[in-house]
Image (tube, rainbow over all chains, first blue to last red; front, side, top):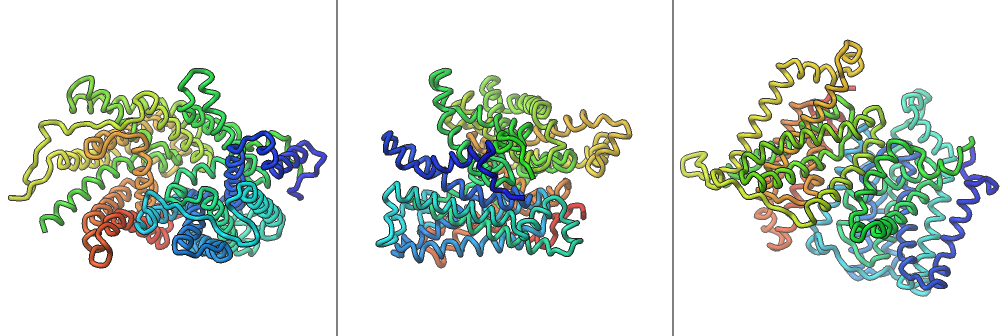
Length: 324
Length: 304
Protein backbone atom coordinates (compact mmCIF):
# COMPACT_ATOMS: atom_id res chain seq x y z
CA UNK A 1 0.00 0.00 0.00
CA UNK A 2 2.35 2.68 -1.21
CA UNK A 3 0.98 6.19 -1.17
CA UNK A 4 3.70 7.61 -3.38
CA UNK A 5 2.29 6.86 -6.81
CA UNK A 6 4.70 5.45 -9.39
CA UNK A 7 5.82 7.97 -11.98
CA UNK A 8 4.34 6.14 -14.94
CA UNK A 9 0.72 6.70 -13.90
CA UNK A 10 -0.99 9.96 -14.90
CA UNK A 11 -1.28 10.90 -11.25
CA UNK A 12 2.42 10.38 -10.70
CA UNK A 13 3.33 12.41 -13.77
CA UNK A 14 1.08 15.32 -12.85
CA UNK A 15 2.42 15.38 -9.31
CA UNK A 16 6.03 15.21 -10.44
CA UNK A 17 5.46 18.02 -12.94
CA UNK A 18 3.78 20.12 -10.28
CA UNK A 19 6.66 19.64 -7.85
CA UNK A 20 9.20 20.55 -10.52
CA UNK A 21 7.29 23.73 -11.39
CA UNK A 22 7.06 24.64 -7.70
CA UNK A 23 10.77 23.93 -7.23
CA UNK A 24 11.81 26.39 -9.95
CA UNK A 25 9.01 28.92 -9.40
CA UNK A 26 11.34 31.79 -8.34
CA UNK A 27 13.33 31.33 -11.57
CA UNK A 28 10.12 31.34 -13.61
CA UNK A 29 8.67 34.42 -11.95
CA UNK A 30 12.00 36.19 -12.43
CA UNK A 31 12.23 35.18 -16.08
CA UNK A 32 8.74 36.47 -16.78
CA UNK A 33 9.11 39.38 -14.35
CA UNK A 34 6.03 38.45 -12.31
CA UNK A 35 7.14 39.17 -8.74
CA UNK A 36 3.56 39.14 -7.54
CA UNK A 37 3.22 35.49 -8.52
CA UNK A 38 6.13 34.57 -6.28
CA UNK A 39 4.38 35.99 -3.23
CA UNK A 40 1.24 34.01 -4.11
CA UNK A 41 3.46 30.96 -4.60
CA UNK A 42 4.99 31.46 -1.17
CA UNK A 43 1.60 31.67 0.45
CA UNK A 44 0.46 28.56 -1.41
CA UNK A 45 3.45 26.62 -0.13
CA UNK A 46 2.93 27.78 3.45
CA UNK A 47 -0.79 27.06 3.40
CA UNK A 48 -0.06 23.67 1.87
CA UNK A 49 2.09 22.80 4.90
CA UNK A 50 -0.85 23.61 7.17
CA UNK A 51 -3.24 21.71 4.90
CA UNK A 52 -1.02 18.62 4.86
CA UNK A 53 -0.85 18.76 8.65
CA UNK A 54 -4.63 19.08 8.91
CA UNK A 55 -5.03 16.20 6.47
CA UNK A 56 -3.09 13.95 8.86
CA UNK A 57 -5.91 14.16 11.38
CA UNK A 58 -8.87 15.09 9.18
CA UNK A 59 -8.18 12.99 6.11
CA UNK A 60 -6.43 9.98 7.60
CA UNK A 61 -7.92 10.11 11.07
CA UNK A 62 -11.45 11.42 10.47
CA UNK A 63 -11.01 14.02 13.22
CA UNK A 64 -12.85 17.10 11.96
CA UNK A 65 -10.83 19.81 13.67
CA UNK A 66 -12.45 23.18 13.03
CA UNK A 67 -9.69 25.14 14.70
CA UNK A 68 -6.56 24.36 12.78
CA UNK A 69 -5.79 28.00 11.95
CA UNK A 70 -5.05 28.50 15.63
CA UNK A 71 -1.62 27.01 14.94
CA UNK A 72 -0.98 29.76 12.39
CA UNK A 73 -1.62 32.11 15.26
CA UNK A 74 0.45 30.32 17.89
CA UNK A 75 3.43 29.85 15.59
CA UNK A 76 3.14 33.41 14.36
CA UNK A 77 2.65 35.02 17.76
CA UNK A 78 5.57 33.09 19.28
CA UNK A 79 7.84 34.48 16.56
CA UNK A 80 6.28 37.93 16.71
CA UNK A 81 6.39 38.30 20.47
CA UNK A 82 10.00 37.14 20.70
CA UNK A 83 10.99 39.45 17.87
CA UNK A 84 9.13 42.33 19.54
CA UNK A 85 11.27 41.82 22.63
CA UNK A 86 14.50 41.83 20.67
CA UNK A 87 15.05 38.09 20.29
CA UNK A 88 15.59 38.15 16.57
CA UNK A 89 17.45 34.91 15.96
CA UNK A 90 15.41 32.20 14.32
CA UNK A 91 17.42 29.57 16.19
CA UNK A 92 15.50 30.52 19.33
CA UNK A 93 12.23 31.79 17.79
CA UNK A 94 11.45 28.76 15.69
CA UNK A 95 11.96 26.03 18.31
CA UNK A 96 10.00 28.06 20.86
CA UNK A 97 7.15 28.48 18.37
CA UNK A 98 7.07 24.78 17.51
CA UNK A 99 7.15 23.78 21.16
CA UNK A 100 4.33 26.21 21.94
CA UNK A 101 2.18 24.85 19.11
CA UNK A 102 2.92 21.27 20.14
CA UNK A 103 2.04 21.86 23.78
CA UNK A 104 -1.19 23.64 22.87
CA UNK A 105 -2.11 20.82 20.48
CA UNK A 106 -1.43 18.25 23.21
CA UNK A 107 -3.63 20.14 25.68
CA UNK A 108 -6.49 20.71 23.23
CA UNK A 109 -6.26 17.15 21.96
CA UNK A 110 -6.30 15.69 25.47
CA UNK A 111 -9.50 17.58 26.29
CA UNK A 112 -11.34 17.46 22.98
CA UNK A 113 -10.61 13.91 21.84
CA UNK A 114 -12.85 12.73 24.66
CA UNK A 115 -15.79 13.96 22.59
CA UNK A 116 -17.23 12.83 19.27
CA UNK A 117 -18.97 14.20 16.21
CA UNK A 118 -20.33 17.70 16.40
CA UNK A 119 -19.01 18.08 19.95
CA UNK A 120 -15.46 17.55 18.67
CA UNK A 121 -15.96 20.01 15.82
CA UNK A 122 -17.26 22.65 18.18
CA UNK A 123 -14.75 22.16 20.99
CA UNK A 124 -11.79 22.48 18.63
CA UNK A 125 -13.42 25.62 17.25
CA UNK A 126 -13.98 26.92 20.76
CA UNK A 127 -10.34 26.46 21.77
CA UNK A 128 -9.25 28.26 18.61
CA UNK A 129 -11.65 31.11 19.36
CA UNK A 130 -10.22 31.28 22.87
CA UNK A 131 -6.72 31.89 21.51
CA UNK A 132 -8.15 34.25 18.90
CA UNK A 133 -9.73 36.42 21.58
CA UNK A 134 -6.60 36.29 23.74
CA UNK A 135 -4.64 37.55 20.73
CA UNK A 136 -7.19 40.33 20.25
CA UNK A 137 -6.89 41.29 23.91
CA UNK A 138 -3.10 41.60 23.98
CA UNK A 139 -2.79 45.39 24.05
CA UNK A 140 1.01 45.14 24.22
CA UNK A 141 1.10 43.28 20.92
CA UNK A 142 -1.32 45.42 18.96
CA UNK A 143 -4.61 43.81 20.09
CA UNK A 144 -6.95 43.49 17.10
CA UNK A 145 -4.74 45.60 14.82
CA UNK A 146 -1.82 43.19 15.00
CA UNK A 147 1.86 43.98 15.00
CA UNK A 148 4.55 44.58 12.41
CA UNK A 149 7.54 42.39 13.18
CA UNK A 150 11.01 41.96 11.75
CA UNK A 151 11.73 38.67 10.04
CA UNK A 152 13.65 35.92 11.83
CA UNK A 153 17.41 36.10 11.40
CA UNK A 154 19.65 33.20 10.52
CA UNK A 155 23.01 35.05 10.33
CA UNK A 156 25.39 33.63 7.75
CA UNK A 157 22.89 31.01 6.64
CA UNK A 158 20.15 32.78 4.72
CA UNK A 159 18.33 36.08 4.59
CA UNK A 160 14.56 35.71 4.84
CA UNK A 161 14.07 39.18 3.40
CA UNK A 162 15.20 37.79 0.06
CA UNK A 163 11.96 36.60 -1.52
CA UNK A 164 13.48 33.74 -3.49
CA UNK A 165 15.44 32.31 -0.53
CA UNK A 166 12.36 32.52 1.63
CA UNK A 167 10.33 30.73 -1.00
CA UNK A 168 12.87 27.94 -1.32
CA UNK A 169 13.08 27.54 2.43
CA UNK A 170 9.27 27.23 2.61
CA UNK A 171 9.26 24.83 -0.30
CA UNK A 172 11.94 22.66 1.31
CA UNK A 173 9.88 22.58 4.51
CA UNK A 174 6.79 21.62 2.52
CA UNK A 175 8.73 18.74 0.95
CA UNK A 176 9.87 17.69 4.42
CA UNK A 177 6.27 17.82 5.67
CA UNK A 178 5.05 15.75 2.71
CA UNK A 179 7.84 13.24 3.28
CA UNK A 180 6.90 12.98 6.95
CA UNK A 181 3.23 12.58 6.07
CA UNK A 182 3.92 9.74 3.66
CA UNK A 183 6.02 7.99 6.31
CA UNK A 184 3.25 8.60 8.83
CA UNK A 185 0.47 7.29 6.61
CA UNK A 186 2.29 4.07 5.81
CA UNK A 187 3.58 3.38 9.29
CA UNK A 188 1.95 1.13 11.83
CA UNK A 189 1.03 4.28 13.75
CA UNK A 190 -0.65 5.73 10.68
CA UNK A 191 -2.49 2.51 9.99
CA UNK A 192 -3.93 2.54 13.51
CA UNK A 193 -5.13 6.12 12.97
CA UNK A 194 -6.68 5.18 9.62
CA UNK A 195 -8.21 2.04 11.09
CA UNK A 196 -9.74 4.07 13.91
CA UNK A 197 -11.30 6.38 11.32
CA UNK A 198 -13.26 3.55 9.75
CA UNK A 199 -14.08 1.77 12.99
CA UNK A 200 -12.67 2.86 16.31
CA UNK A 201 -14.55 0.24 18.31
CA UNK A 202 -12.86 -2.49 16.32
CA UNK A 203 -9.44 -0.93 16.83
CA UNK A 204 -10.13 -0.70 20.55
CA UNK A 205 -11.24 -4.32 20.57
CA UNK A 206 -8.00 -5.25 18.83
CA UNK A 207 -6.24 -3.81 21.83
CA UNK A 208 -5.04 -0.47 20.48
CA UNK A 209 -5.29 2.48 22.87
CA UNK A 210 -7.06 4.58 20.23
CA UNK A 211 -7.24 7.71 22.36
CA UNK A 212 -3.46 7.84 22.83
CA UNK A 213 -2.80 7.21 19.15
CA UNK A 214 -5.21 9.96 18.19
CA UNK A 215 -3.71 12.33 20.71
CA UNK A 216 -0.23 11.70 19.30
CA UNK A 217 -1.47 12.37 15.76
CA UNK A 218 -3.31 15.52 16.85
CA UNK A 219 -0.18 16.80 18.59
CA UNK A 220 2.06 16.12 15.59
CA UNK A 221 -0.42 17.82 13.33
CA UNK A 222 -0.36 20.86 15.61
CA UNK A 223 3.43 21.00 15.49
CA UNK A 224 3.42 21.19 11.69
CA UNK A 225 0.61 23.74 11.85
CA UNK A 226 2.86 25.83 14.10
CA UNK A 227 5.61 25.58 11.50
CA UNK A 228 3.24 27.00 8.90
CA UNK A 229 2.40 29.80 11.35
CA UNK A 230 6.08 30.68 11.75
CA UNK A 231 6.43 30.94 7.98
CA UNK A 232 3.21 32.92 7.58
CA UNK A 233 4.34 35.51 10.14
CA UNK A 234 7.71 35.81 8.39
CA UNK A 235 6.13 36.03 4.96
CA UNK A 236 4.13 39.15 5.76
CA UNK A 237 6.42 40.37 8.58
CA UNK A 238 3.16 40.86 10.41
CA UNK A 239 1.02 39.08 12.98
CA UNK A 240 -2.61 39.69 13.89
CA UNK A 241 -5.51 37.73 15.35
CA UNK A 242 -7.01 37.64 11.85
CA UNK A 243 -4.53 34.94 10.86
CA UNK A 244 -6.30 32.56 13.23
CA UNK A 245 -9.91 33.62 12.68
CA UNK A 246 -12.36 30.75 12.35
CA UNK A 247 -12.85 31.56 8.67
CA UNK A 248 -9.22 30.56 8.09
CA UNK A 249 -9.89 27.25 9.84
CA UNK A 250 -12.86 26.79 7.51
CA UNK A 251 -10.67 27.63 4.53
CA UNK A 252 -8.22 24.92 5.59
CA UNK A 253 -11.01 22.33 5.75
CA UNK A 254 -12.21 23.47 2.34
CA UNK A 255 -8.70 23.07 0.95
CA UNK A 256 -8.27 19.56 2.31
CA UNK A 257 -11.66 18.37 1.03
CA UNK A 258 -11.24 20.16 -2.29
CA UNK A 259 -7.90 18.48 -2.88
CA UNK A 260 -8.88 15.01 -1.73
CA UNK A 261 -8.97 13.84 1.87
CA UNK A 262 -6.60 11.17 3.04
CA UNK A 263 -4.35 11.45 0.01
CA UNK A 264 -0.74 12.57 0.26
CA UNK A 265 -0.76 15.32 -2.36
CA UNK A 266 -4.45 16.20 -2.12
CA UNK A 267 -3.87 19.11 0.28
CA UNK A 268 -1.29 20.56 -2.11
CA UNK A 269 -3.70 20.33 -5.06
CA UNK A 270 -6.40 21.82 -2.87
CA UNK A 271 -4.25 24.77 -1.80
CA UNK A 272 -3.27 25.54 -5.37
CA UNK A 273 -6.88 25.28 -6.55
CA UNK A 274 -8.07 27.49 -3.70
CA UNK A 275 -5.55 30.25 -4.36
CA UNK A 276 -5.93 30.01 -8.12
CA UNK A 277 -9.71 30.37 -7.78
CA UNK A 278 -9.23 33.29 -5.43
CA UNK A 279 -6.98 35.02 -7.97
CA UNK A 280 -8.80 34.12 -11.18
CA UNK A 281 -12.51 34.19 -10.30
CA UNK A 282 -12.62 37.99 -9.83
CA UNK A 283 -11.04 38.82 -13.23
CA UNK A 284 -13.18 36.17 -14.93
CA UNK A 285 -16.36 37.64 -13.46
CA UNK A 286 -15.15 41.08 -14.44
CA UNK A 287 -14.93 39.82 -18.02
CA UNK A 288 -18.59 38.82 -17.88
CA UNK A 289 -19.53 42.22 -16.61
CA UNK A 290 -17.43 45.03 -15.20
CA UNK A 291 -17.59 45.19 -11.42
CA UNK A 292 -18.79 41.65 -10.85
CA UNK A 293 -15.31 40.47 -9.87
CA UNK A 294 -15.66 42.01 -6.47
CA UNK A 295 -18.43 39.55 -5.71
CA UNK A 296 -16.53 36.40 -6.61
CA UNK A 297 -17.55 34.62 -3.41
CA UNK A 298 -21.13 34.51 -4.61
CA UNK A 299 -19.84 31.96 -7.12
CA UNK A 300 -17.26 30.40 -4.84
CA UNK A 301 -19.77 29.66 -2.05
CA UNK A 302 -22.13 27.56 -4.20
CA UNK A 303 -19.05 25.84 -5.66
CA UNK A 304 -18.24 24.60 -2.16
CA UNK A 305 -21.80 23.35 -1.78
CA UNK A 306 -21.45 21.42 -5.02
CA UNK A 307 -18.09 19.97 -3.99
CA UNK A 308 -19.59 18.82 -0.70
CA UNK A 309 -22.57 17.29 -2.47
CA UNK A 310 -21.07 15.72 -5.56
CA UNK A 311 -17.28 15.67 -5.46
CA UNK A 312 -16.18 13.94 -2.30
CA UNK A 313 -12.97 12.56 -3.79
CA UNK A 314 -11.71 16.05 -4.52
CA UNK A 315 -9.21 16.95 -7.19
CA UNK A 316 -7.15 13.84 -6.51
CA UNK A 317 -9.96 11.64 -7.81
CA UNK A 318 -9.83 13.44 -11.18
CA UNK A 319 -6.52 11.74 -11.86
CA UNK A 320 -8.09 8.31 -12.01
CA UNK A 321 -8.93 5.77 -9.35
CA UNK A 322 -6.46 4.94 -6.68
CA UNK A 323 -5.06 1.43 -6.65
CA UNK A 324 -4.28 -0.35 -3.43
CA UNK B 1 -26.29 47.15 43.34
CA UNK B 2 -28.58 48.80 40.77
CA UNK B 3 -25.76 48.64 38.26
CA UNK B 4 -25.40 44.92 38.90
CA UNK B 5 -29.13 44.40 38.40
CA UNK B 6 -29.16 46.35 35.15
CA UNK B 7 -26.19 44.45 33.82
CA UNK B 8 -27.78 41.15 34.77
CA UNK B 9 -30.91 42.19 32.87
CA UNK B 10 -28.69 42.95 29.87
CA UNK B 11 -27.31 39.45 30.29
CA UNK B 12 -30.81 37.99 30.27
CA UNK B 13 -31.64 39.98 27.14
CA UNK B 14 -28.50 38.79 25.36
CA UNK B 15 -29.13 35.25 26.57
CA UNK B 16 -32.67 35.26 25.19
CA UNK B 17 -31.47 36.50 21.79
CA UNK B 18 -28.90 33.74 21.69
CA UNK B 19 -31.49 31.24 22.82
CA UNK B 20 -33.65 32.12 19.80
CA UNK B 21 -30.68 31.37 17.57
CA UNK B 22 -29.63 28.27 19.48
CA UNK B 23 -33.17 26.82 19.56
CA UNK B 24 -33.26 26.54 15.77
CA UNK B 25 -29.78 25.06 15.68
CA UNK B 26 -30.44 22.49 18.34
CA UNK B 27 -33.72 21.46 16.67
CA UNK B 28 -32.15 21.02 13.24
CA UNK B 29 -29.26 19.10 14.75
CA UNK B 30 -31.38 17.01 17.08
CA UNK B 31 -33.92 16.04 14.44
CA UNK B 32 -32.20 16.21 11.08
CA UNK B 33 -28.66 15.50 12.38
CA UNK B 34 -27.59 18.59 10.46
CA UNK B 35 -24.67 20.87 11.33
CA UNK B 36 -25.85 24.17 9.90
CA UNK B 37 -23.14 26.81 9.96
CA UNK B 38 -25.34 29.00 7.77
CA UNK B 39 -27.83 29.51 10.59
CA UNK B 40 -26.07 32.80 11.33
CA UNK B 41 -26.75 33.85 7.74
CA UNK B 42 -30.48 33.49 8.39
CA UNK B 43 -30.01 35.75 11.42
CA UNK B 44 -28.31 38.30 9.18
CA UNK B 45 -30.92 37.95 6.42
CA UNK B 46 -33.68 38.45 9.01
CA UNK B 47 -32.12 41.76 10.03
CA UNK B 48 -31.60 42.95 6.43
CA UNK B 49 -35.07 41.94 5.30
CA UNK B 50 -36.53 43.70 8.32
CA UNK B 51 -34.48 46.81 7.54
CA UNK B 52 -35.83 46.82 4.00
CA UNK B 53 -39.45 46.20 5.01
CA UNK B 54 -39.31 48.78 7.78
CA UNK B 55 -38.12 51.25 5.18
CA UNK B 56 -41.03 50.38 2.88
CA UNK B 57 -43.79 50.28 5.46
CA UNK B 58 -42.35 53.09 7.59
CA UNK B 59 -43.33 51.13 10.67
CA UNK B 60 -41.06 49.03 12.88
CA UNK B 61 -43.79 46.69 14.06
CA UNK B 62 -45.28 46.13 10.61
CA UNK B 63 -41.87 45.65 8.99
CA UNK B 64 -40.78 43.23 11.69
CA UNK B 65 -44.01 41.26 11.43
CA UNK B 66 -43.67 40.98 7.65
CA UNK B 67 -40.01 39.99 7.96
CA UNK B 68 -40.93 36.86 9.90
CA UNK B 69 -42.88 35.08 7.13
CA UNK B 70 -40.19 36.28 4.69
CA UNK B 71 -37.44 34.53 6.66
CA UNK B 72 -39.69 31.48 6.97
CA UNK B 73 -39.94 31.37 3.18
CA UNK B 74 -36.21 31.90 2.81
CA UNK B 75 -35.58 29.04 5.24
CA UNK B 76 -37.87 26.74 3.28
CA UNK B 77 -36.20 27.61 -0.01
CA UNK B 78 -32.72 27.01 1.45
CA UNK B 79 -33.92 23.72 2.91
CA UNK B 80 -35.41 22.57 -0.38
CA UNK B 81 -32.40 23.51 -2.50
CA UNK B 82 -29.47 22.56 -0.29
CA UNK B 83 -30.17 21.26 3.20
CA UNK B 84 -32.43 18.39 2.16
CA UNK B 85 -29.54 16.83 0.29
CA UNK B 86 -27.28 17.05 3.32
CA UNK B 87 -29.27 15.21 6.00
CA UNK B 88 -27.88 11.80 5.15
CA UNK B 89 -24.32 13.03 4.67
CA UNK B 90 -21.58 13.10 7.28
CA UNK B 91 -20.83 16.17 9.35
CA UNK B 92 -17.83 17.16 7.30
CA UNK B 93 -19.92 17.52 4.13
CA UNK B 94 -22.44 19.58 6.07
CA UNK B 95 -19.73 21.84 7.47
CA UNK B 96 -18.28 22.35 4.00
CA UNK B 97 -21.58 23.01 2.24
CA UNK B 98 -22.97 25.36 4.87
CA UNK B 99 -19.62 27.17 5.05
CA UNK B 100 -20.10 27.74 1.32
CA UNK B 101 -23.58 29.10 2.05
CA UNK B 102 -22.14 31.61 4.53
CA UNK B 103 -19.83 32.97 1.82
CA UNK B 104 -22.77 33.07 -0.57
CA UNK B 105 -25.10 34.94 1.75
CA UNK B 106 -22.47 37.44 2.90
CA UNK B 107 -21.75 38.26 -0.72
CA UNK B 108 -25.42 38.27 -1.68
CA UNK B 109 -26.08 40.91 0.96
CA UNK B 110 -23.21 42.98 -0.42
CA UNK B 111 -24.67 42.71 -3.93
CA UNK B 112 -28.22 43.59 -2.92
CA UNK B 113 -27.74 46.11 -0.12
CA UNK B 114 -24.14 47.25 -0.59
CA UNK B 115 -21.14 46.95 1.74
CA UNK B 116 -22.12 49.69 4.20
CA UNK B 117 -23.86 48.70 7.42
CA UNK B 118 -27.46 49.75 8.01
CA UNK B 119 -29.12 50.85 11.18
CA UNK B 120 -32.66 50.32 12.35
CA UNK B 121 -33.94 53.00 14.68
CA UNK B 122 -35.53 51.98 17.94
CA UNK B 123 -39.29 52.48 17.39
CA UNK B 124 -40.58 55.70 18.91
CA UNK B 125 -43.00 54.08 21.36
CA UNK B 126 -40.12 52.05 22.84
CA UNK B 127 -37.56 54.85 22.77
CA UNK B 128 -37.86 55.62 26.47
CA UNK B 129 -37.20 53.92 29.77
CA UNK B 130 -39.37 51.84 32.01
CA UNK B 131 -38.99 51.61 35.75
CA UNK B 132 -38.40 47.97 36.49
CA UNK B 133 -38.09 48.80 40.17
CA UNK B 134 -39.05 52.11 41.74
CA UNK B 135 -36.26 54.52 40.78
CA UNK B 136 -34.43 52.07 38.53
CA UNK B 137 -34.93 52.98 34.86
CA UNK B 138 -34.24 50.48 32.09
CA UNK B 139 -34.39 51.07 28.30
CA UNK B 140 -37.85 50.06 27.12
CA UNK B 141 -36.57 48.51 23.91
CA UNK B 142 -34.27 46.12 25.74
CA UNK B 143 -37.09 45.31 28.10
CA UNK B 144 -39.29 44.55 25.09
CA UNK B 145 -36.67 42.13 23.81
CA UNK B 146 -36.76 40.33 27.13
CA UNK B 147 -40.56 40.13 27.00
CA UNK B 148 -40.70 38.93 23.38
CA UNK B 149 -37.83 36.50 23.93
CA UNK B 150 -39.46 35.04 27.02
CA UNK B 151 -42.82 34.74 25.23
CA UNK B 152 -41.22 32.94 22.32
CA UNK B 153 -39.37 30.63 24.69
CA UNK B 154 -42.65 29.78 26.42
CA UNK B 155 -44.39 29.33 23.06
CA UNK B 156 -41.65 26.99 21.94
CA UNK B 157 -41.78 24.99 25.15
CA UNK B 158 -45.55 24.69 24.73
CA UNK B 159 -45.18 23.76 21.07
CA UNK B 160 -42.67 21.03 21.77
CA UNK B 161 -44.26 19.63 24.91
CA UNK B 162 -47.99 20.02 24.28
CA UNK B 163 -48.83 19.90 20.57
CA UNK B 164 -49.01 17.18 18.00
CA UNK B 165 -46.26 18.70 15.91
CA UNK B 166 -44.10 18.96 19.02
CA UNK B 167 -44.73 15.31 19.69
CA UNK B 168 -43.53 14.50 16.19
CA UNK B 169 -40.48 16.71 16.71
CA UNK B 170 -39.60 14.89 19.91
CA UNK B 171 -40.21 11.53 18.31
CA UNK B 172 -38.08 12.57 15.33
CA UNK B 173 -35.25 13.58 17.62
CA UNK B 174 -35.13 10.19 19.27
CA UNK B 175 -35.72 7.99 16.22
CA UNK B 176 -36.16 9.47 12.78
CA UNK B 177 -36.53 6.28 10.83
CA UNK B 178 -39.14 4.90 13.17
CA UNK B 179 -41.54 7.82 12.80
CA UNK B 180 -40.97 7.69 9.04
CA UNK B 181 -41.96 4.04 9.11
CA UNK B 182 -45.06 4.94 11.11
CA UNK B 183 -46.29 6.96 8.17
CA UNK B 184 -45.36 10.45 9.27
CA UNK B 185 -44.33 12.67 6.38
CA UNK B 186 -40.85 13.38 7.70
CA UNK B 187 -39.80 15.44 4.71
CA UNK B 188 -42.56 17.91 5.44
CA UNK B 189 -41.70 17.79 9.13
CA UNK B 190 -38.03 18.54 8.41
CA UNK B 191 -38.97 21.44 6.15
CA UNK B 192 -41.28 22.87 8.81
CA UNK B 193 -38.67 22.54 11.54
CA UNK B 194 -36.04 24.20 9.38
CA UNK B 195 -38.43 27.03 8.54
CA UNK B 196 -39.26 27.42 12.22
CA UNK B 197 -35.55 27.64 13.05
CA UNK B 198 -35.14 30.25 10.32
CA UNK B 199 -37.96 32.36 11.77
CA UNK B 200 -36.39 32.28 15.23
CA UNK B 201 -33.00 33.20 13.78
CA UNK B 202 -34.55 36.03 11.77
CA UNK B 203 -36.47 37.27 14.81
CA UNK B 204 -33.26 37.32 16.85
CA UNK B 205 -31.49 39.19 14.06
CA UNK B 206 -34.11 41.87 13.63
CA UNK B 207 -34.53 42.39 17.36
CA UNK B 208 -30.78 42.73 17.84
CA UNK B 209 -30.50 45.14 14.91
CA UNK B 210 -31.41 48.41 16.69
CA UNK B 211 -28.89 47.61 19.45
CA UNK B 212 -25.94 46.44 17.38
CA UNK B 213 -26.22 47.32 13.70
CA UNK B 214 -27.15 45.53 10.51
CA UNK B 215 -23.94 44.49 8.83
CA UNK B 216 -22.37 41.78 6.71
CA UNK B 217 -21.11 38.89 8.77
CA UNK B 218 -23.15 39.97 11.81
CA UNK B 219 -24.37 36.40 12.21
CA UNK B 220 -20.98 34.72 12.10
CA UNK B 221 -19.64 35.55 15.55
CA UNK B 222 -22.94 35.12 17.33
CA UNK B 223 -23.40 31.81 15.51
CA UNK B 224 -20.28 30.44 17.15
CA UNK B 225 -21.68 31.51 20.51
CA UNK B 226 -24.95 29.76 19.63
CA UNK B 227 -23.02 26.60 18.87
CA UNK B 228 -21.20 26.91 22.18
CA UNK B 229 -24.61 27.19 23.83
CA UNK B 230 -26.07 24.08 22.25
CA UNK B 231 -22.91 22.13 22.99
CA UNK B 232 -22.96 23.21 26.65
CA UNK B 233 -26.68 22.49 26.91
CA UNK B 234 -26.51 19.19 25.10
CA UNK B 235 -27.33 18.96 21.42
CA UNK B 236 -31.01 18.45 20.70
CA UNK B 237 -32.18 19.70 24.08
CA UNK B 238 -34.28 22.88 24.08
CA UNK B 239 -34.11 23.03 27.87
CA UNK B 240 -30.33 22.70 27.74
CA UNK B 241 -30.11 25.46 25.14
CA UNK B 242 -32.16 27.75 27.37
CA UNK B 243 -30.10 27.12 30.50
CA UNK B 244 -26.83 27.44 28.63
CA UNK B 245 -27.95 30.63 26.87
CA UNK B 246 -28.76 32.23 30.21
CA UNK B 247 -25.38 31.20 31.63
CA UNK B 248 -23.45 32.43 28.60
CA UNK B 249 -25.41 35.69 28.53
CA UNK B 250 -24.53 36.37 32.16
CA UNK B 251 -20.87 35.51 31.72
CA UNK B 252 -20.58 37.72 28.66
CA UNK B 253 -22.26 40.79 30.12
CA UNK B 254 -20.84 40.51 33.60
CA UNK B 255 -17.39 39.97 32.10
CA UNK B 256 -17.72 43.07 29.94
CA UNK B 257 -19.26 45.23 32.62
CA UNK B 258 -17.11 44.40 35.60
CA UNK B 259 -13.89 43.01 34.23
CA UNK B 260 -12.42 46.42 33.20
CA UNK B 261 -12.69 47.80 36.75
CA UNK B 262 -11.27 44.62 38.20
CA UNK B 263 -8.39 44.60 35.71
CA UNK B 264 -7.61 48.27 36.27
CA UNK B 265 -6.34 47.39 39.72
CA UNK B 266 -3.30 45.79 38.15
CA UNK B 267 -3.28 46.87 34.47
CA UNK B 268 -3.23 50.25 32.76
CA UNK B 269 -6.66 51.63 31.86
CA UNK B 270 -6.27 51.10 28.11
CA UNK B 271 -4.84 47.60 28.50
CA UNK B 272 -7.74 46.76 30.81
CA UNK B 273 -10.38 47.99 28.39
CA UNK B 274 -8.95 46.03 25.49
CA UNK B 275 -8.37 42.88 27.56
CA UNK B 276 -11.79 42.79 29.24
CA UNK B 277 -13.98 41.74 26.28
CA UNK B 278 -11.34 39.16 25.42
CA UNK B 279 -11.45 37.77 28.95
CA UNK B 280 -15.24 37.54 28.98
CA UNK B 281 -15.11 35.61 25.69
CA UNK B 282 -12.34 33.40 27.01
CA UNK B 283 -14.39 32.68 30.12
CA UNK B 284 -17.24 31.40 27.95
CA UNK B 285 -14.97 28.98 26.13
CA UNK B 286 -13.40 27.82 29.39
CA UNK B 287 -16.86 27.07 30.77
CA UNK B 288 -17.64 25.10 27.63
CA UNK B 289 -14.41 23.13 27.79
CA UNK B 290 -15.05 22.43 31.46
CA UNK B 291 -18.58 21.18 30.80
CA UNK B 292 -17.44 18.92 27.99
CA UNK B 293 -14.62 17.45 30.02
CA UNK B 294 -17.05 16.77 32.83
CA UNK B 295 -19.92 15.66 30.55
CA UNK B 296 -18.86 14.95 26.97
CA UNK B 297 -22.45 15.27 25.68
CA UNK B 298 -23.36 18.50 27.42
CA UNK B 299 -25.54 19.25 30.43
CA UNK B 300 -28.81 17.83 29.11
CA UNK B 301 -27.53 15.77 26.21
CA UNK B 302 -28.45 12.17 25.60
CA UNK B 303 -25.89 9.70 26.86
CA UNK B 304 -24.54 7.52 24.10
